Length: 296
Image 1: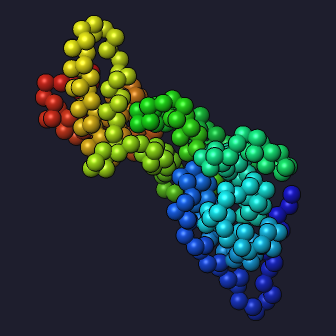
Image 2: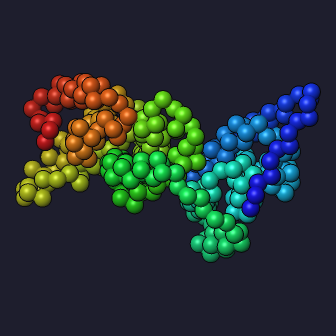
Image 3: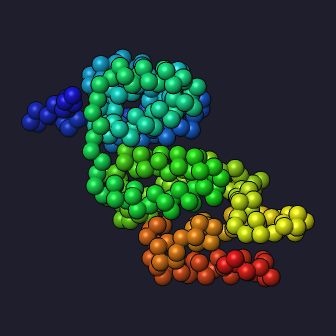
């Protein structure tokens, strides 16, 4: 399906006017719905197209497109969503996957989702080689980090998959940023932390990770094991109170077992800065738990 191009302006006429940003997303739109809707809205604004242009390109009325762009009313079917995606030249494959996740969030049945997608014939684009390489390199550390906060392996894998799909949708921004690995990492941690339970002060709650640490199976005395879990829960809570970069490095190195020489590439920081942040984090934790082996 060939997307119609915006007509060129005759000589001497002003350039095509930029479209106004759509109205705010409705509060009723779920988190998964916003995950794909926000990149679509950003793409519309960046394209300079007006809502009238989108009407002409998609074949849908202004009222229906306005509702879709605001996340208003019923969850949109794939047909109208696809029409907007193609009109804005957005990669179809990753957005379709995000659309399906949000459809589940909106309590749509598997049959409803399958039928809506089946009604639209489309070919998925080839994944950019650089994006594929980044996905293969970062899938394991990203998922390990996500599981510390989300506990469930399935939830961690879903958060990682959605991160890479959103990254594909915004790949132009990622590759034009001065630090693509840092851009990708910040997207991952934002996705993960948005789904992580919070403590009263707003810090992520990772105390539950204390129940799945290694070494507990070797403690046969129940009282001793509970005391160990209590200590580790307090220790993990202290980690969550560290500055963001220090917390990330501590989680990756000590809770995920990522080797120090790999971490700089994961989070997009230089080895020197990473080492300094690790040093400060260990110092802060040792001050709080002077009798605890931080490495352990």
